[in-house]
Image (cartoon, rainbow, N blue to C red; front, top):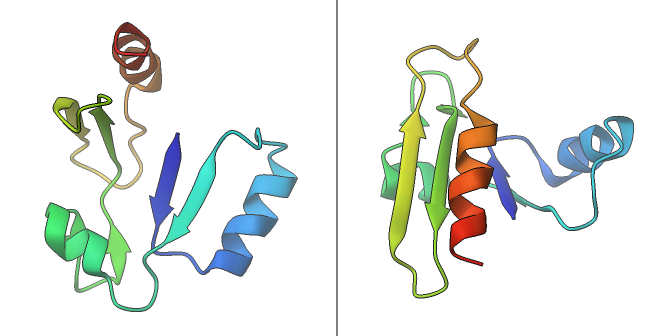
Length: 89
């Protein structure tokens, strides 16, 4: 599982430690060039942030699920994304 954000790698590490998240989650930072955000359409350029989005990709790199929430304060349906991902493990 990957988590991509516009936070710096240092901020991500602090968050991961404070939230006691699994080492099975790899955090990736899009804070410098914002390539991920531009290439996936998840960049909010005026804010320098990414939209909250879940993307489930199978082992053949086929996208199986995408959910982009309409507001930054809304959390995607993570249970649904995990359920779909488990079908393709």
